Image (cartoon, rainbow, N blue to C red; front, side, top):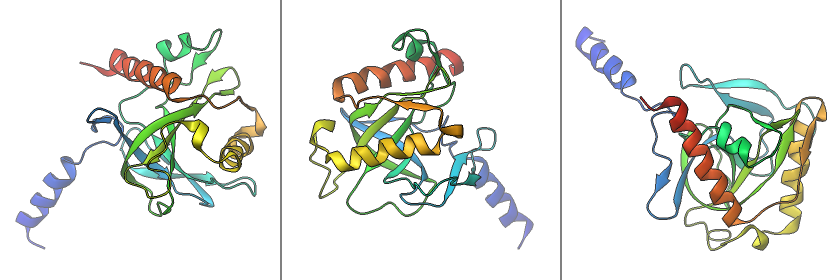
Length: 202
């Protein structure tokens, strides 16, 4: 390969958007972007390396419970002070806001962006930290795309997600509450976007 081509490739790599910091989280009036870290039923847990922006192996799944849906995080969000204010006496976990993406066709490749629509969330507490999860549906999905609120999601699927959240936490320390609807989820998302800009803007 010539030096010129190497230079072009290096420049191309340099210009790639960081999945957390370089991607606009919103699309139009009600669209949202989720960066997929883990596919459904993956036996290895993946996580974004914040410094490099690359997806890394976090650990093998510790139990037989596997994620029942793809999940990752919303870019340019942070569970900080404003998120903590929504949850008395708790602290934000200082990470991006996580989201599960429901779809009929499984998302089989990690490290991709998915356009989704927010429908609700699940309150999660882990060792006195707020670690709430958003629930969203994949844009134009045939089975889930028309869902407007989490109350329309089959109960068995929500139970599987909640069970997975308890099982995959370290030492099973997570406490999972009852799912909440779109309105509360939208407030949580707005707080996480504000927390991100308070820390990283400028």
